[in-house]
Image 1: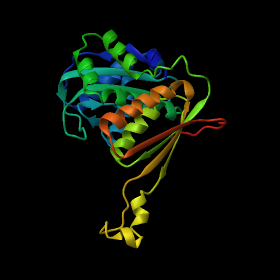
Image 2 (image 1 turned 45 degrees about the vertical axis):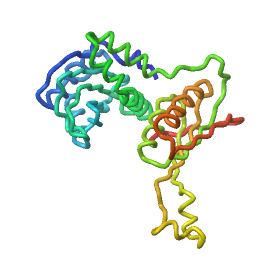
Image 3 (image 1 turned 60 degrees about the vertical axis):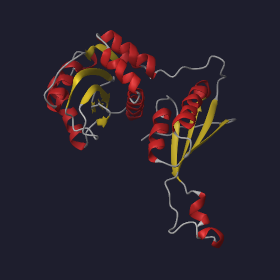
Image 4 (image 1 turned 120 degrees about the horizontal axis):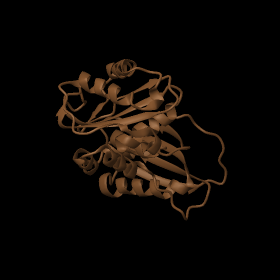
Length: 269
């Protein structure tokens, strides 16, 4: 991703106050139009595109964060941010006021990159420490610097060219969200998700084990298979190990192997 090119200081506003969600969307439209990439559009065009997306479901995903986004017939991404220290009602899923708004105006034909930007920004803002840093900034340049530092995946200089395959076996939706957030940040990565069963689903039918379950076992279980550029494999491992060792000691299994042959690509959509 090239966040440095699409996150423009002219599309960032610090320490604002709003009475309602509509005012926030209008402020986004007025800011976004400052980016030359949207020269063929009016702020009204942007406002209605954002409003239409919000009518599908709120982009306030909780913890005081919202990422309004929409698509236009434009050629480049436009990303910006607004900090609202006092908060504003935004129909967030946890019903809490939103204090940080990051918005994305995306080209209609670049869905994969749209997903990657959403994942990177939401993952970065999932950290309470990063939220605190964002709210504390005093100028657009500092805010841009925080986003760049915390959304870049550092490549290991010692890593050879090539590809690795990661396989995750996941037993909760919360873990699934976190793993997909990590993987979708990576450019050129193909990801597939399949349904799976825990062993208990099959052991239930065996007389020796059937007494352990009163009803058939059909717990949440998914398998995620992803191809990752080898230069980024260590960073994916580091982030995954943090989840395994610090947050989810059960319900997540990870294996990784180097690929001898790899061809083709999968659309994230």
